[in-house]
Amino acid sequence: MIFDAFSLYKWRMDIRHLRYFTAVADEGSVTKAASRLNLSQPALSRQIHALQDELGLKLFEYVGRGIQLTPQGQDLLALARRVIRDMERFRERAGAFEAKHAGVLRVASTPQTIESVLADCLAGFLAIHREVEVQFVEGGATEMAGFLKRGEAELVVTYFEADQTLESRHFYKIPFFVVVPPGHRFAGNNAVEVRDLTTERIMALQGKFGSRALFESACRLARVSPAIYHESSSAHTLVALAAAGHGVAVIPGTVKIHREDVHLAQLHFNEAPLYFDLFAAWNPANPLPPYGHAVIEYLADWFQRQRPMPML
View 1 (cartoon, rainbow, N blue to C red):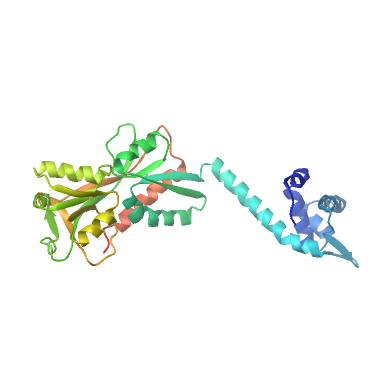
View 2 (tube, rainbow, N blue to C red):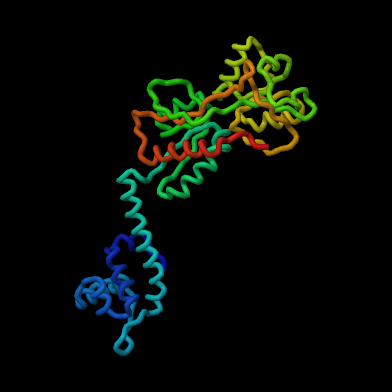
């Protein structure tokens, strides 16, 4: 049965009519259904007749002293039940929105962090909190504060420049790695010093990524000026180039690597691992709803349990 917009506009049906219809169908009796609904039998009969008149269909027919669905009524019963369930879910979700337990949360991060951390972690969160929807916003670390201040994201998860106007929560220290092919002079090393990169062709993420800025800061402190051979917005491009022998890739530990033709060594500065800190940050001028804070707590617990590292 197909109705045009004008026909739907003329209808005055509400959810009560569908509840009356399904109750009579369930009980097989107007009298029993009326008792269940706390209505008088004549009042329920009038409502059923009014519904049939509005539809232009007979939903029930009398057989002896009983009542049963017509073929049209049988066809519409399942749809009526579905509409009732959808309306109940609609009201529940609207109530959750009003209580700020449901809604859309825009989370900004780098492509590497979305791939290695947020994709799996937030899938677990959403399986528990089905009333929440997460939308991802990709960018470099230097873009994160702008996303928050312009209202393009409610939450960012990344390294970001210190900004006193934002609130933040520290999650984890992310190491740096160098990637080389088998046979490279670093291939047998578990760690590589920043100063040892001086003679290498370096491939790194573009300047908009926070890990690149921190790597360059470490190079300045070590008084070395590595030759940047190639810049990319994709860490996997850098890994592929390193595997093919084009140079040494410097990547953050948030990158998943699923290949066997490369070797990873942790990058050190003065014999200590080089790290950058991963934060969640939000703008107090645009307060996070309760489900936003729930995401932060879930992420903090995930980092405590998983302690993610690059995967070969």
